[in-house]
Image 1 (cartoon, rainbow, N blue to C red):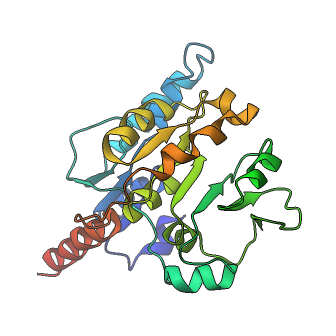
Image 2 (image 1 turned 180 degrees about the vertical axis):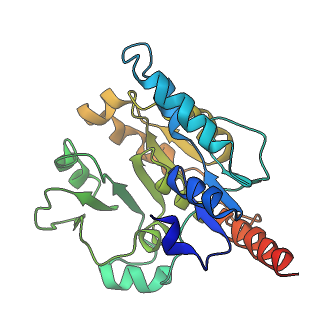
Length: 267
């Protein structure tokens, strides 16, 4: 039924969801799979404790193999033979560093650290200790509970009007859980990152291998995050270099690839 709605489509672009590949196969048109992990790889980490995943893994592997073109985006969880490997894919900033700092009421010379805790319930543990670092400003974004800003702490709710890549582009360092979008945004901005690996997530292992090899970074252990001991790592984090990337954003690399595909199929 879905295929019937796309009779005029010439190319299907999809991420890890299998449905787009199946629709393209049904319509006999090319498909482009873009991923840094696939669901069969994720599910494989649970087979020992949840054996029924095995049948789903095989099905998803079969569907994935039907993609006409396969693009992998760094950091890659499982390298495969593919059509193209690209740099981390992220959204680009819309607003300058100076404009964002002006909106936040923060001087350009002042050290600013973004603490991006989207997906982590509650407030930053022991945030009151950050007030002692009164020569620094801390932006605390994505908390489910956002108390009024005070002193050198600026709390930004989950529905903050600030565009996340703009915040990353306006700060001197980022402290965050190691999720793909924030890794990619920090990578392309060249901003030092203090990262927290989520131990029960299968992608944490490849992320933990990629980040220190490709980015100015400091790992923050989960127990140090919970105890507040990570605050002692702030000076180390701020001492790291801010990089200027010479490679294109993976999003632009993918766009070029797809444009070339479209042109070749029109000829």
